[in-house]
Length: 110
Image (cartoon, rainbow, N blue to C red; front, top):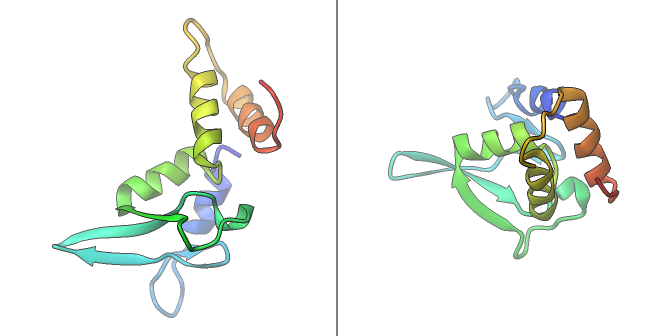
């Protein structure tokens, strides 16, 4: 849902290697020219996304922020959510946001 629980799980530190746990596997971190980069799955692995053609490299902070806000929504679902969220004149409660995110993830209409 609004990713608080999911981020808490993702932000746990692995006791052995210091890597953050990420669902089915460890977070893939890369360091290039002094910058921390992460591999982001366009379609989340938890939602059937594989490795081939489904990975982009993002700055680590941006990757964490994306999942903090969108959880495991796909890119298309995230866009749908933003369109709903940014409806002119709308006032959204956290409860409405959570319900909308869940409805989108289940393929429902808003």
